[in-house]
Length: 358
Length: 125
Image 1 (cartoon, rainbow over the protein chains, first blue to last red):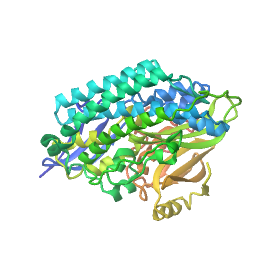
Image 2 (tube, chains in turn yellow, green):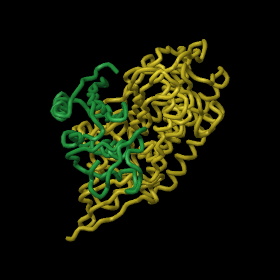
Image 3 (cartoon, chains in turn blue, purple):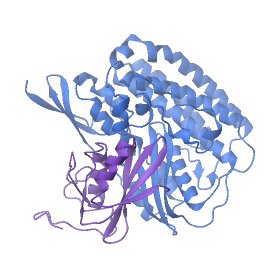
Image 4 (cartoon, one colour):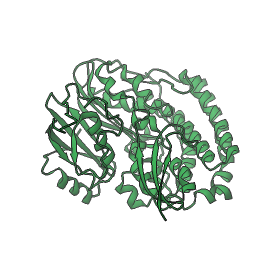
């Protein structure tokens, strides 16, 4: 059988953002994959050259529209480490609360897109309908549905009074109830299983070797989550990574589904332990030296390398996003599978291209 | 950054092999321009949530041995550094020849404050 090359993307109905995969096929089976990037590269890292290090928070929030708060948190954490700033306890817990709310909305967005990838339109709509409640929480607590700007160097700029915290918990109770209703379909439905079980298998060994992160890594049985380091207030909360076994698209789906419920539990616990006090400290001086800092984004490990020279601009800001790390594992999942399964498997790593290219 | 090990062009691949043998996961690489002529290339590794780094300081004009044969995942970031800083990597498993993000006519090394230009016809710096 002669080899055929199929261009998959950059515009494809399963891709919310453009990426191009050159698929080399024999019959209907994928033999090789070559990725092509560069459709949404913005050069955001270079803005550190011209923007004040405080202004860079807003730039970092715009690396990704889905996990904006967590990008800013990672950046602020790095600058705080460079400048030896210890943020108030209340700010540490508030960062966790907003980060986990973000995780819920990101996972619900993905669960919907994943359902859409295998043609389950009603499931897609159901996931996004539930997600609307989270967007309302973002707007009410952070002033913006998509980019709630919370983090500043030295803490957070918004507080959550007891009434607001109670309202958030009430909304999350409703979200949890509705997410639980989805379990029967997302994890047990015949159609879902038929399209995901045994598809795009990534073994534990391959996941480690190829540098997979987040649910892609944990779906392959590796119990690793940057939250285990205990940054912000995670060290004081009951958190254990959700792990899958089979390393297939179904396993990654299951990890994200359970992490959605776990994130709600973490918000609940963080609110119950929320200490009184200030939400930020005054920042004096400029960052100097170099640091590597990491947080767990919904898609996995996010790493910032920051180098300061004691001035208002940074010498270097380097961002390694989780999708960037999950592209090599994706290339290993695709060979040997049928063309019809490519969209489901590509979606199973939860690709974010604007994050990847920055 | 706590554990940073200095390395040279001659030893970077063997030290990366040692990291792999010791069970480290390749996290990424960072390229940092130091002055008009030199850059630092940092190799970041993780084992059980513990980070370790290799630091390679080189001249911008020098080619760097690729570690993508040791860690396949490195091919993407090495191509990115080729695009952004104009540093060349020898032995890349998949070489985009500076077109991962950029068009062929894009300026050389857009992430360098002072960049080295390349003569496209002769291939010389």
